[in-house]
Length: 193
Image: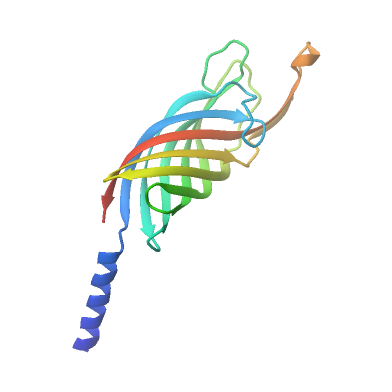
């Protein structure tokens, strides 16, 4: 019994020493738009800038592969004030489920689910956006001691709103099939467990 307990403690200690699980906090800026398809320019307005803030947990599988889920509050949508644009200012609670590859620098890749928590509509109301968003994250980052810097691109796949918008001028008619497109620049701090 004592021998088994001793072997178990040695294995547990070895795992804790070799695992480099981390938690971290981060914040940064977003460039976002409600776009009409994969990485296309905004149809409900222009690209706009806002912010995000969140936390992460990193669980290392191997020396070069880790699972890095995040939980973040993100302001998205079209927020710029130009006369001809139709604006939906949105706030999301996003859960990116990223995998991290390599170390310095590193790549991020994974799905993301987002929950709409607030919408402000301006000028023209096309109706409500869907409350669930999902898509794909791609990113690159670098660790500088405990500080990290990341650049992420998120493209939503879920059509949040679909309307035909017709004006008296036939050249201004547009079909809106809006999805979220977000570019994020983050700076954060890691705490090793």
